[in-house]
Image 1 (cartoon, rainbow, N blue to C red):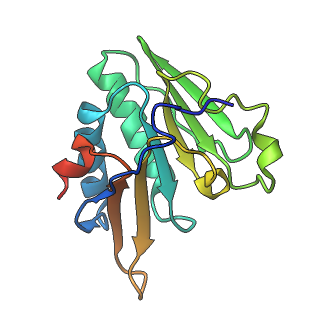
Image 2: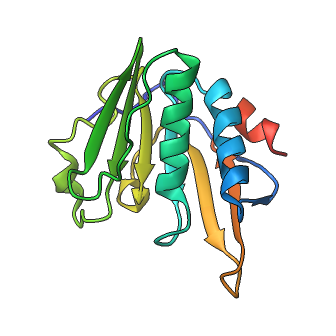
Image 3: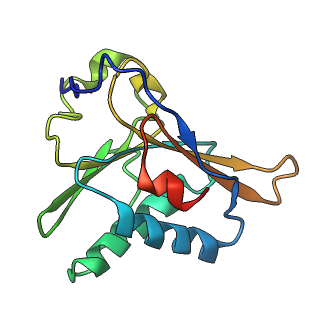
Length: 168
């Protein structure tokens, strides 16, 4: 299992964005576009939130925007709920989209090759099982309002990050 040892013994700085309204699908698309321009190889996106709150929609928008920026054909981006992993090669970028919802034990991760390639961009839905990993992450907390009429997003990171800074 890959662990970014450069950061395992450091105290992490937690930075946090403001609360971003993503009720409208168009606003989530615009956020995905901004983030795609600020993303670096090796970024790890951990997507948290209830079913249907926008995690997979964000991943789809983000991957399609990377494809557009890299002048490659847009592909259908499906939820990897059953396959656990979908990979997208976008020129020199390798994007891995995981859905760990069905995994119950940490040992089930052994064959996934999670974090083995330090230059991969990892998008991980339902990352709760990964709490013991000591890596640099950008955390996306998707949530509903109390009455389920609105959705919001808060982006945070365990290191200083330009994506979080963009939404402060």
